[in-house]
Image (cartoon, rainbow, N blue to C red; front, side):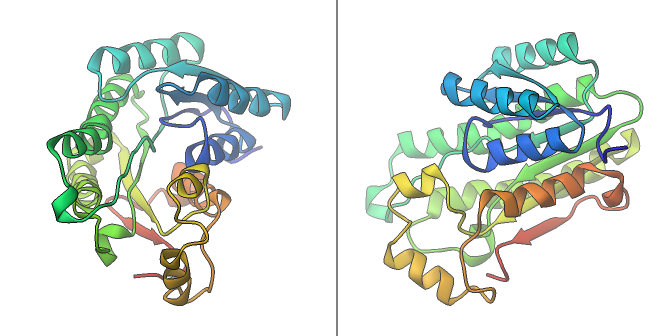
Length: 249
């Protein structure tokens, strides 16, 4: 029997990168997966198709996690397709680096709306749809909340908020048998980090130099941790912040 057999998982922001890898790994472990996306329909449908082609169950569902009506619809479609939720991965996130002189109100609201409000709304929606058996909520934070890199004031603030929310909700939802943990990746090679210019930059070189395991991460490095946290193997873990950055801290 697969580790997540008969479980229902929702992964937000799962059309590419870390989210896509987590969705595929959860599917491979036996979960039925809802691949959420905000705008990248083709990518999300491709991820769902790959899960199905590998023998799993998956659908792609559009929804902006910072929009409460979209989140309500996301979980309505989830329960209609598969049933009550067992696993939520709050992966949807955005980032923009820049010095204090470059900060704008638009940048602030864009990052906080997705990274913090979106996480809260998705969690609220999931909690309404968990069964009496509870389940697992996995937040995707970032090692930036520990290393506080220059030029990341807004992004680091959002991920520090995720750390705090993880601690609060672990206490708040424990009575419902819902575990809440966070995976905080270091630099991961994704479409996003390539587009942002991090890959091949001095920032990458400096990150690798300060990472004990001597490399940046790959999406699969995070996905395997997510499967662990979603499973009964992590049944005694809640409120934990797992730094997943090869020792970077």
